[in-house]
Length: 371
Image (cartoon, rainbow, N blue to C red; front, side):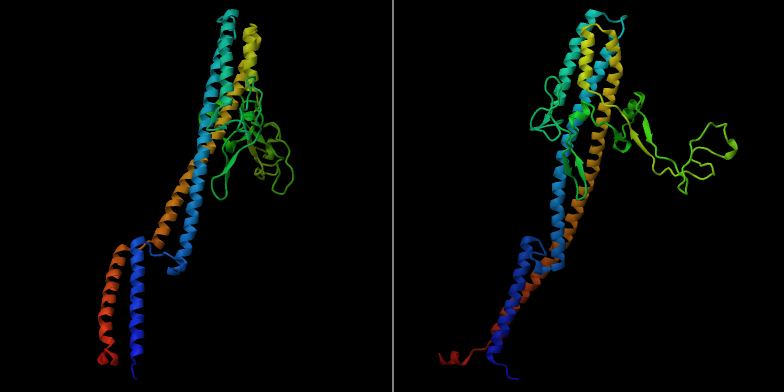
């Protein structure tokens, strides 16, 4: 087979182009420290890296949402802590002024002034704001939710933020629930693990009340109410057992904290009025209602505390997910520096050899002899 000069030229051009292209790719990897700079470098790896970057970006937004919600919830919880302390102080004053042995009309008049200050402090707590948002106004966060008399101008809205792809959480608690006592029934799952708060609620008479549905046997037939222990002792009836000796179906039992909401502002105003009018009976009656108000605030703080715990655990999961996604993306797209330097030196040597041998491969033509 005859080798034409054109074939030599094409071969040299192809080899040089190939070596220079490979050299350029390696130099680009060295400059970016990335093995995958465009999808054509590794389509599968590029797809996974893009998916990881999407997860990282969404995770960063979720973390921002959680931090914002945590700030709102923690400041709300701190404000309710001040409210609880103020109510405890009002109860101490009421106890001190509830009998004639330690109080009289003049002392009650003086204490009424302090109770008035507690009322004003309660209004200030209700109108507290974080940044440009009021904490306890529901959706209406641009204006104070309470006027100087305690009238509520907000609503019952809960501002929910997304903390991951599947979950939302409320970052506020409406002032109508905390200060006015509307919708304060809370399931046991909403209570935090603060045992002192729960024990305090139990001490005030609010214990878990079973929400009982009719008990049934395994075959679906209703079971009668168990009588005295001495009655029908031979039948084997007992707690959780039907008359036929079968276990009862208690899967539909649930426990709910039942509590009657109270208006905190009205309680303080009634106490102040009773002190100013030297009405010992009103002062004594306020003791029970103050206990209910304190328990109401405790339940609200428990709600906020459980949400903060949820945010903390979700934040830890998101941060771990961010690290895992970045690690996976790095393993797919980052280059091995030692391997890269080795390949770069090898390709540079190959390119120099191609340039050196091309001059020998392309011999002088007839035109060189005619000059």
